[in-house]
Length: 353
Image (cartoon, rainbow, N blue to C red):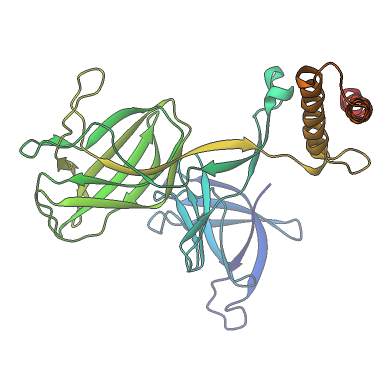
């Protein structure tokens, strides 16, 4: 099925200048000369063919302006290199590696939803059962930001390419890093910070264009948190691009860390700013209330307290207990029995589901 677009009719006649006709792009191909051939299905069921000369923009067959909606419409999927879509100056939607953030650009708060998920495709047998569903979770962070030098301090007179391939063990949310420059960088160079996993770039950030100097601490504050579930290898690198002709000038030279990794490899010195996190399952109302509105957690806690009190009275009281103690124990035993019956009924309801 095509995508609904509106096309401005180009004509020398003043009677048709600026008219809008609505149609669907049925297919796009190229003729022998490389011109784009756009087949359109009109709303009246007729077909029209537009020819876009090869010397026109390559975007012309795929992107158009719909003045009735005041929108630019694309008939092809869009991709961005900087990991974000910006909604005017108010919000952005960004990929933070293993998470998605909805950032309020006015308050600079990166929001995220609670997540549930489905493993795809559900047509596979192994995805059709309970293992094919991710139950709803919320991400809970440690309170304070940690400053971590993973491989100790740095060697002041040495240099290494910022091309770091490392194993990350823990679940962490990283907000930025510091490194120490081993070369001068002028305003003719744009630095790019890139995170890559399995030969796919998962995050890219352009650093401010300015003069940087050898032995300066380069502070990189990420535009949104970069989050990883851990137990994986990730490549992080800083490259240099000449602004005038977009030529890649290789990796940035930085100071190496004092310590090597487990394989004896020299590592980039970096101080990471991060929090650790857990993804905790969410409980719904039906999970904690029975049919009568009683809190199942409270009932279970009360049952435990009464059972403990019952055991304590049986083990710590003298053999010749006063009558009031015996009455209290009998009352506790009756309440425990009542709660046990309630719990059995509740468990029966769940097991029947």
